[in-house]
Length: 338
Image (cartoon, rainbow, N blue to C red; front, side, top):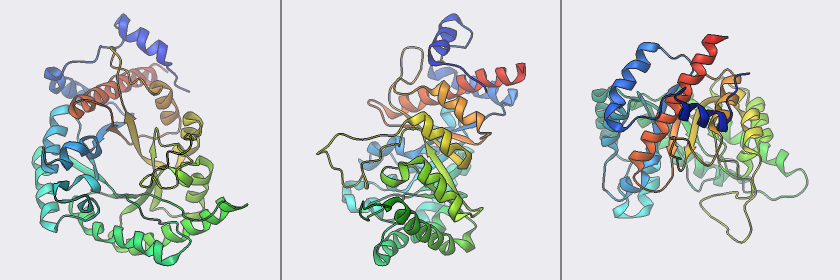
């Protein structure tokens, strides 16, 4: 198994074995070198969620993001539906899709910048694994208007969240799986003509139990159903993050063990980033160790930066992209040396 520990990574950066992460003006040159070298291990994207606050405040538009993606040297975007609208007209707009014309012009902006739209993320206070069919239908009704827009953008993946509203009596996880399978299969049927892949992400509550989520994929057993794996969403005490309860301390499962369980089912990876040290290394988790797990699973898709830290989100996205580029160079070198 390929392996580079965090301490060793920092030592290599300081010693010059890995290039120090470059400042913004040299990004274009570095991107060209990466493309010429043909690194095979993974591609890099970022999520529109990185910019959710300036988008909500009307300080920028979704149509600006393809140009930003081009400028930071990635070739793909992951869209989060909640970020597509200016919320100065009310937070309720967060869960209402813009008109079709919006998606056509957004596709034009992406095409003009040479950027692919890979994923449409849908999420809200809806229970796709509800014990009540009417409540489950509300979740499906929320998703349905986004099917055609996802296709307009050229995305192949529609990712949803999965929340369960049942009790916690003995056997509750099996009961949750039964209702989750029902909800996912209804969603697969609803999107059958679209050909879209349906993803669920580990995103709090029952979906952040790795063994449970892996068993769900096996039970649904559809070539169109897979996972978006998030590197940080392993909180299990919060059934619905849109209805936060701060009355008790949060409970988490082990991130690294969870990633080992989930990566065999992953078709997209969302890489949380919060803050970076002076070598350009993300502080809150061990990304060399995480990449070791990801690559050992034979995943060779996109790693999408999801910056949620303080300060200018553009700086956070640049730092996240540069870190994954440096790590990719390292792992590619190790692969060639074997």
